[in-house]
Length: 220
Image (cartoon, rainbow, N blue to C red):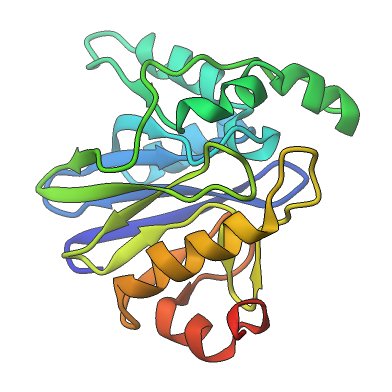
């Protein structure tokens, strides 16, 4: 992860890994998947003296996107601050982002707002954070519009709920597709190289090599 600083802020009762990805040279920070607990995220930014540059969403589930609208509003209310945009996921998750309040009601959660990103993302686009280039890969299966962010030079990725240490994302939703999820992992993530480290949406991170060797869901 040369040149990048990674800070994990657990949010929501689902203990989702909101990830602050910071360019070490400039302090510019992408906030990935602010699912809730906005005060906690803002406190982490302040404690680290981090410059919030953008909000990136991997997909449209409550625990990943539920706090995005509030966080953007509060960051953009700071006097003189550059505007922080909400970027991603793929447009195919719009139905989930427009149903965040409904998702929250199912969990008995309040304070959640639906979210319309400033722009959606498509496979092949790139995002800049300081001098770092992040490739956007569309990895459906957990949700139709799930994307991941890969900094090939820094050998780091944020994979959301696609691949975990020893597991993979759930697909037992009406829109889930297990075959598509496994295909995403095998055709898009495993070729990134065994030395690539990643943070996932829940639990500890890992490397592509460790998962290739030992993850039971992708051995066949």
